[in-house]
Length: 82
Image 1 (tube, rainbow, N blue to C red):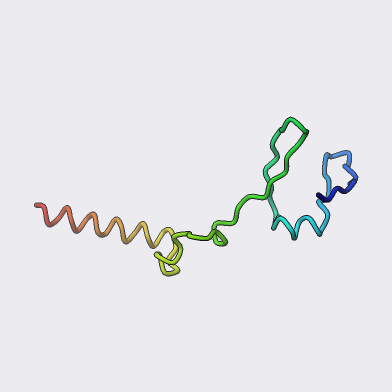
Image 2: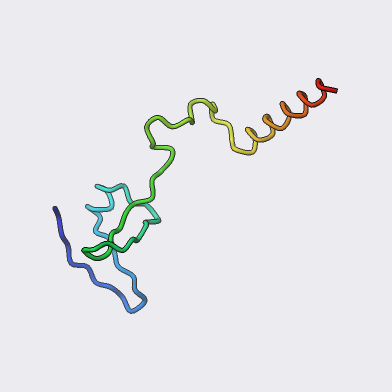
């Protein structure tokens, strides 16, 4: 386990060493949690990198496009019921 000493500014900012940012895929945001040992810093998962994600089912469509298609299907079903 790698440990580093970093400086904390008067505004409470600390720099996460580059090697650790790359290793844990830390981008612009992290989650800070309290733990028994102290503070735990975890990267926020990137949904586009998740294995088994549903993105292949949506064929590159945006959320707005998917919602519009779903609503159009609902409207069509409602019309058929009448």
